[in-house]
Image (cartoon, rainbow, N blue to C red; front, side, top):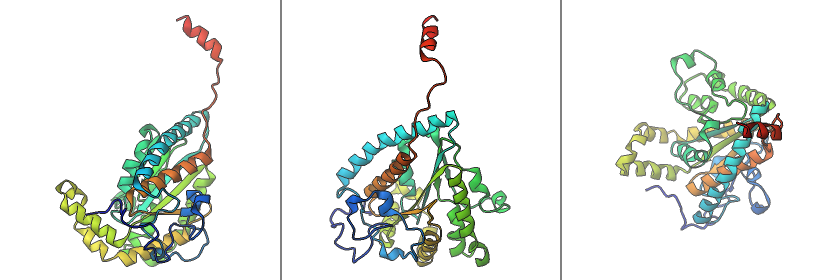
Length: 310
């Protein structure tokens, strides 16, 4: 059965020198925000996923109960900031947010959408789950379908998988020549820089789940008939390609973590930490955007007086 809590382990007991998050290791985590702790440093050199602890809780609460309470509390603030972001677009503010979720099968992309994104008002969301490209999409550049799904001003866009599939599965499965996918890293960086220049705050999250944890979660789906719809026999074959996928993710994290759009590496074995960390990441980014309700362009007292006459 998949292990949600892992409360029997001390968070530091089995790390064997592994990093706890994307950016820092062995430092005072309480002094840093989650953006700093989980950020994959741009230009920081090769990324080795095996050095990161998938069950770590960098910067987070030390137990599930407290994490759940803090996540719920953050939900209220997230909803407030989302409403302000949406409202200010009515006054011409062009800013938006794009939240990109990537990770191996069972890493928790769907769970994140349910438990974290579910706290937002759907009216201000633009969500897209990217599957295998359609025949029409194959006839166009790989970013064509991505551009069509981008958030409008005031919206928060959610990508469940994304343009990174075009340097991940296509690389592992040899769906296009190496000469093709190898050029896409720089194309992606330029694309994301252009979004940032246009006022889009980009939050890219890699959910880092462990190999054994993935097996346990797949077994849990087999054990529960109500979860059989989530199981695909192809998932077993994909596990045989785990090293190749890890290598592909390492390349994407290294080559596409930029100042304009850094990657955040979130340990995903503990679902309660995953939800807490992503809530905190989104909250920190929205607070940096500092959206505000626009001022009305009318005379309040005059409007009140006219309304009272009706």
